[in-house]
Length: 359
Image (cartoon, helix red, strand yellow):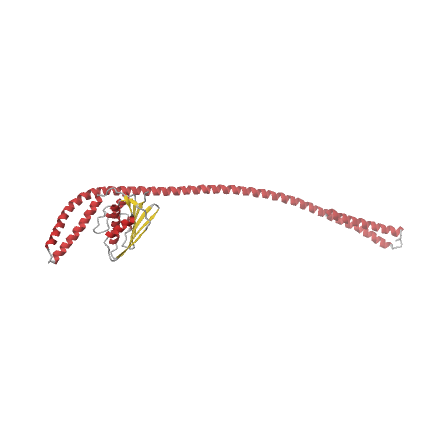
């Protein structure tokens, strides 16, 4: 484009100069000699002016060429700098990616370390609980053994005089002693009830001392629950609800031991509801365990007593021996199961027995 423009300007100047010269020559020697000389001079001046214009345009073309050259050099520099920046960007991105991968790797290692630490803490807590449970079971077992020996000897010593007293009362009733005297009859009734209570305590002591290895047979837990409910003395102010799962598998248990546990727990629940309430008994099967729960709406058990409730000789009842739940815990442990309790004062208590289903 620059060469073409320059060529056109040069050609125009040459034509103008040539035309001026031709006209002057023609005026002097040729057919235009009659034209005024002033006009020729004007044409000559026009040609000279064209030369001046040519020089001016040439300078501007050279300036334009210089600007174009500088622009080309600037474009080269910008292109070079752009490539350098792109290389620096790629290098920076590479370093960022490498650092990101390092951080991700460290984060992964840290997460694994934290997870491993949490698992370790959980395992230590579990082992600590198992050790504590084993220690508690050992202490309870030793207490049970010692108390069992004492209970056996004391029970036999007490049962004989109680038997004599019971026979005497039977004789008094048979002959009608005190029949016409209200005070004598009331005292005889009191003696009879206290002898029954004492006999129950002796029976508990003997049961406590006679805990044997369970004789396992295939039994249905729902059938055992129903049999226990038939033995329990019902109260009109207490509603007993049962939700027994129909698909429970039969399991190997000692039916007499399990009956004793269920009877004791259910009887305690009824006794805790002085003002009436509801006892709900449920059976469920899951995770290879049969779960039996006894939920009452009684007075509940305080938090400090919950930790002692399975200890031998601990009782919150005025006339309790403190052996019933301890015997229950021993019987369930003999089956490889567990018995747990949850309670809130004023709202009620839930005893849960879990028995393993062995295939």
